[in-house]
Every structure is written in C-alpha cells, then in structure tokens.
Image 1 (spheres, rainbow, N blue to C red):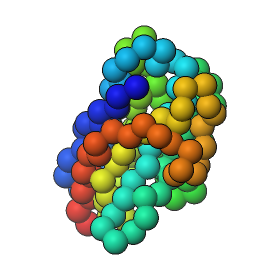
Image 2 (image 1 turned 180 degrees about the horizontal axis):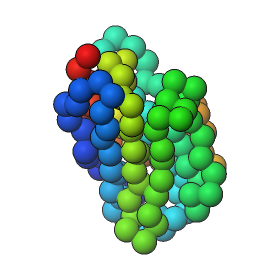
Image 3 (image 1 turned 90 degrees about the horizontal axis):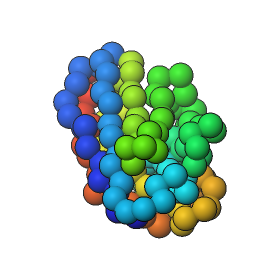
Image 4 (image 1 turned 90 degrees about the vertical axis):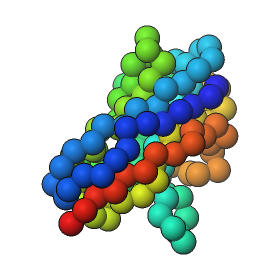
Length: 124
C-alpha cells in the first residue's frame, strides 16, 4: 500500500486542522493505520492509531481529547482531526501502516508503510 499525507499548514494556537492520508492499492480495509509526528532532533512519536474497521482507536496522552482519528474505507482515506492546537503540536506528521492484517500498534517499528509527511506549524 502507498500512503500520501496532506492537509498540513500554519494555524494559530487554539485553531484546528484536518490531515488526510490517501492510500493507493487494494485491500485498504485490511490495514490498520496510524499517525506519527516528528520534530527536528527528536524521535518520531506515536500520535494515534485506528483498527481495520475503525471501531478501535488509540491516542497518545498528549493529544487525547483534542485529536480524532477516523477512516473511510470506501474512499481509501484516513483522517486526523486536530482541535485546540498548541505550539507543541508543531511537527511533521506522517501516516503509516503495519503489514497487511497486522493490528495497530503504538510502536514505531511495527509500521512498514509510510507516507511522505505533512508539516503542521502552530503559532503561539
């Protein structure tokens, strides 16, 4: 599966953005999906994950209650709705998928397919 993230941009603190991750290839619904983010000099960190059907989601503590992950399997697309953005949310955001039929994970090395990243900048 090939992934392409989009929707990043510049937003003021307290604002909102919605990221999208479009997938090409078949069997999109058989891939769990996740969002990660990375700032310069730091390791890529887990943000959120979603199961194949979208029935199960999981969030990092730092974004719980502010971000919502979702997917539309008919459109081969995953989303990350980000509300109440903070300056510390500034990062490059990546969408990712583990091998087909594998469950979602918070671990970076569980994911083998990566999108190219989209920059989110939150001004304070």
